[in-house]
Length: 85
Image (cartoon, rainbow, N blue to C red):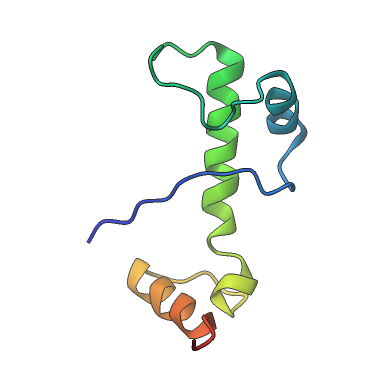
């Protein structure tokens, strides 16, 4: 199984991320033609990754305040929160 997560701005990011975004409007979708990040760019992407990953375990998404013990458990919880179409 492979999970792919794409980071995005949701409006509740830390000030470091917000500041970098204001100075670099293409963030977080900057071109990868220049693979060498300066310290600010690296930290902004790192912080956004942490923020995004932590939000995956939000009780609103999983329907529970406890963290799942496995990816399988997380997916089952997530599935239960999706309204039927």
